[in-house]
Image (cartoon, rainbow, N blue to C red; front, side, top):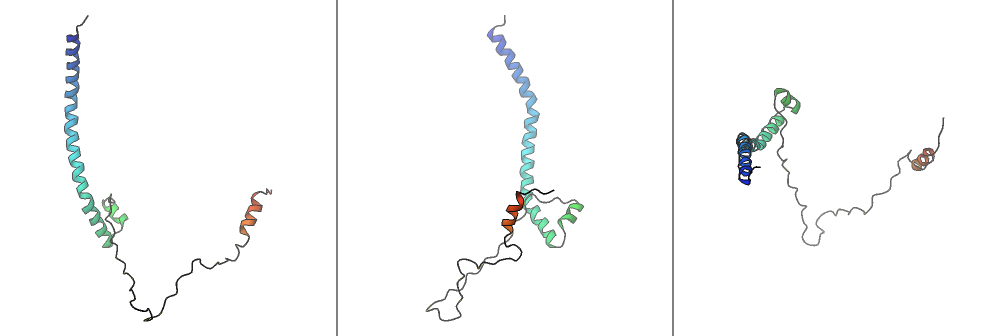
Length: 129
């Protein structure tokens, strides 16, 4: 029968072999993380360059045919600030008044659709051969 010391020694040998097998994977994992970080740094400039090429007249399909991949992230579109309406000072009589929109839009009946719901309900239950 093996002693506790012998069992522990065997376990250390097995563990050492496992650690040795893991070393190459650990090195490649480190390299891979660094390359992924470098690639992520190019996403924004690549997207901007792709958008600039499209703005210059290239289509996404043409760029893909040449070998450019669709960017993972496109640059955010610039939004233009909306101008605030001019505020009137004083009594408000210095210009034409704009009527306020009504709370509900006027009801409009579209010809040919009057009673469509009722006819659809009656024909849904009928079977004709």
